[in-house]
Each structure stands twice: as structure tokens, then as C-alpha cells.
Length: 274
Ligand code: FE2
Image (tube, rainbow, N blue to C red; front, side, top):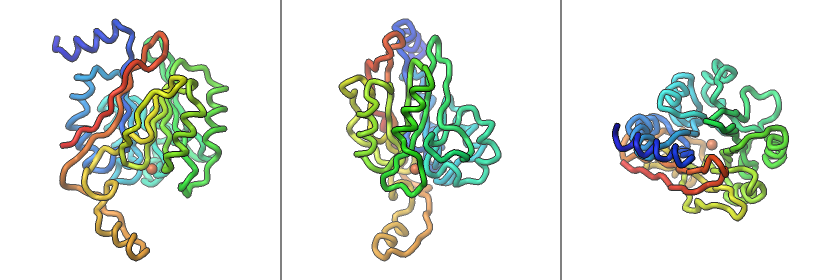
């Protein structure tokens, strides 16, 4: 037995569930960071459950069946999406059959896919769901607050984990405060910039405004800076070119939950740069 499996079985004895949440996995460099680092993090830290945002995994935009399977092969339990859910056409070939893939719950009715999934973990039922913010987002959406209220009222899980995919920090913080004590973990995605505000809110919800991005460290939130700067200077439409060389990062958050009390007992920000 190596030390990692020993520490993980010690945590089992203490009834601690260790969850890793991974920020937007972006393109080739994001996949490389997963391939090269996730196994080590998982075994060293004794991670038992992984939620990852995969809406940018295919060339920085959307997801394919192969990349969804790649994440499951790397022990990701649930893959979340966002405003780029349908950016790669391949998603329509598998989203209806993909048990562990979710898109925002508050997308209008009729949109393919589902907004939450409930899994059994040891003796616990764990519901993972995603909502998308409406501030500074151009997608038509139902109210994330009301949709979440409906979900909490119509399900009965021991643990709720929410990926809030949104641009505005205030909207994410308002959401987390509104549901403080009712959702175990609320973490933000979408901005690709890791925030330094991970904390346990007064009534017990584990909260972090944005997990950050898993992909290129340089560039502008994953893409080559030149066209983006040109757009800011001139307002002209430009093509996004994903960064494919240079340093890489893996961003996320580890949350330790007591399986008996369902309370967060510890957390650790993940920011691996290579
Ligand atoms: Fe997004």
C-alpha cells in the first residue's frame, strides 16, 4: 500500500468525503493539464468525487463525446457546461445519453440535456446541478434563483453541489447568500479567473466566486492576446485563437465534507502552474 491509499482510507474511517471541483477546462492545454496532473492530485489528496467544467474543452469552445469520455476516464464524476454548451455540434449526438453531463438548469424548456444529476455516494445521495447567471450574459434564461428553489423543493438529497456559471461576482455572491445553509457547495465558473474568496458562509455553504481555468496561463482567458486587444482598441470582430504553447495551469477547489453532519470541515484552493 502506498501512502496515498493509506491517507484516503484514513479519511474513510473519519467519514470525510473529499470533493474536487475543477474550473473551466480549456482546449488542448486544459486537457494536457488534466492528463498530466489529475491522477497525482486525486491520489495524493484522497479525492473521492470530482466535478469539472467542460464547456471549453474542445478547442476552447464546446464539448465532444470523445472529450466527455476522456474526463470520465480521468475519474471525473460530473461534467458541467455553460453558455458554450452547444458550441460544438457533436454534443447533440450524445447529450441525451450522457448520464453525467449537465447544462444550466435554467435554460428554457425544450433545450436538450438536463440541469442536474443525483448520484449515490456511499450512504449519501449527492445532487450536482448548474445554473447560469443572467447579468452580462446574452443567453435567454429562466431565473436561476427560482429554478434552484424548485429543484431544492422537488428533490431530497443529502448533499447539493452547485456550479454557478456566471460573469458578475455580485450575482454569484447574492445567489450563495440566498441559499446559504441549503446548498452545501456553491462554486462559480465562466470567468476563467480564480478568485481569492473561498470561504464558508455564516449558515454553512462552502462558497467561491470562481474556480478559475484549467488551461493556458498566458493569453487572455485562454486565447491569443493580439486579436482580443485589437477588438478592445477598434471594436472590430475578431477570431479567437486558443493558446497552445507556454505555461499551463490547473485551477479548482478541494472541499472536505463530513458524511454524517454534511458540513464542510476543510477546504483548499488548487492552483497548479507548470
Ligand atoms: Fe462560459
